[in-house]
Length: 381
Ligand SMILES: Nc1ncnc2c1ncn2[C@@H]1O[C@H](COP(=O)(O)OP(=O)(O)OP(=O)(O)O)[C@@H](O)[C@H]1O
Ligand SMILES: [Mg+2]
Image (cartoon, rainbow, N blue to C red; front, side, top):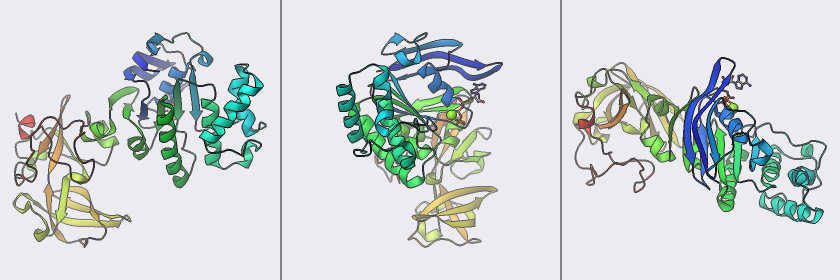
């Protein structure tokens, strides 16, 4: 079922936790709700669930207002991080709970619980009690319990937060697959940007009770609408006075520029193709990260971070290297422009300046993205 939220406000006393939010989610989409602690994510889910009453605004499910509709009538399934299972009930009875409330027949309940156990991969464990399960198994029971009454909207509040990294990763893939198969509209809250980017069809990024940006992960990542989103998603380093950088002399010195590690090439002079456009930098620190090295380089008073494949020879701290900054995000007022280095060698990609690359749909998702549409002119005054 589709979800539509308009002008939603929620105050707790004098404090506004949600400040006039608008968004829409199409039926069957998997949406990741992201934001720092206290930004209002749980409050939004609780408003959708009917566990909080909004001070203003509209919430529609499938085009119909649900304001005033009690939680149990909203056709939603909830899974919270600490939404504990009933400890005195078996797995079977936990999953059957919502169906018993709905007064379904024993035969129907039996069949539905068996199907759900198979769906969540826990067949055979129906007689266990929650304390006899691992954390990952318990969360899968919680999913099965939420799905039992056939909800049309699944609301998940950091469902994996209490699990260790391995279990979390496998459950992510599992959940994504399950939600796709069932085609059920799902909104899940996470702190973990990697989790959000990997799982979601769309992201909603919140900050201080406001919605900063909504869109497909690649678009939000590639074209952050605000400095907050650029900082929050992916790695980013702020560049004060971007006009002091080679190839960016035309950028307004007072604009805020942000650079990502993947926009920067670092190497000894013979390793760089764009040598004339490169700055000189001094390697500060080198960290081994498994697949790659993280290298911190000082360039004119700023420290940039880049990643190099771990099989490559890595520069040592103190070494002088060349640093080529391929592009910057430049924020000015309400506008963001992706500004390419003017001195970049042309044309590594013949298909330069072709249409807005915002959705990135026809591009390789990682590694070496081609230059984007809004060239230097976009930030020129
Ligand atoms: N019942 C409440 N009474 C008073 N303040 C509340 C209440 N619930 C939430 N808040 C406040 O509203 C703000 C948003 O809280 P919310 O739980 O929605 O944040 P969140 O984005 O889910 O954070 P986290 O990532 O830490 O879970 C916080 O400042 C919180 O203290
Ligand atoms: Mg929360």
